[in-house]
Amino acid sequence: MAVALHAWIVDKDGEIRVRHTFFAETEEDADRLLKQHAASCPGAAGGETIEVVEDIDELPDAETIEDFEEEGLDEDDEEDEDEDK
Image (cartoon, rainbow, N blue to C red; front, side):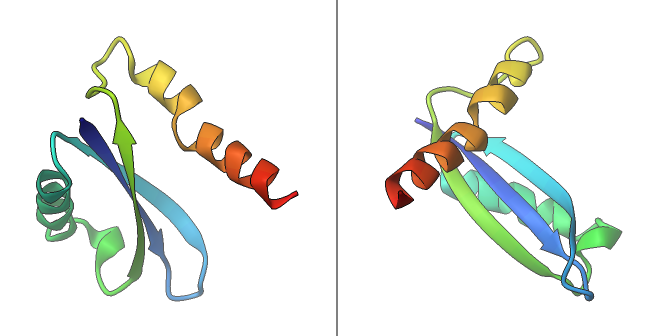
């Protein structure tokens, strides 16, 4: 099973303006991609990062990324909201 590692960068003022998503075969690979990217990303410098790992059936490609965005975290969030009621 593949993973999508979502990382939200919290600015110094507490606002979130950037989200990165790293797709990989394993959580360790996704974390490595995040760290490599953060080393050269000015937005990630010195800010807090909120990370969520999502198990996905397969890695998206250029043809399926839109389906992932429509079905990804949004679907999980809706399920969580329903459980809270």
